[in-house]
Length: 178
Image (tube, rainbow, N blue to C red):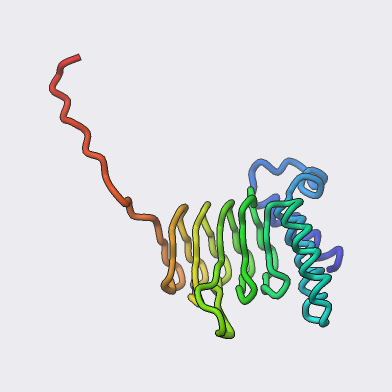
């Protein structure tokens, strides 16, 4: 991980989060950024055969940041995990460049024994709070996945997916009585 990539990450956070007031604040107070930086180290360890240390560090990072990223997952550039508590990114997940991930997002697997068990997320994608993407699905570039959506099917580029209400409440008509 180079200083240039770290600066790129900091700029991405400042561009995407209006609450980010300074570079120092982002460096010191953004656990999603810390999790991504540590993931880069863990991913290097994993790909160089140092799997136990990579898993142990990932476990430690999860306890410190609330963000769980498997060391084998592939994460692109300028990814921002905003309010990252509860984010889970599985072993065979692939996340493209310039992706914005909110709290509670899960990129989870469905079946074991397959080479790709987790989602592939394109570039410039928004993953809303508590979105759950399951299995070897693809989310196309520029797609927006709304809050609390559960996806088990692929989504084309540029699509917007939002949760449909499970139930609706019909309020009684106003009869004028107070």
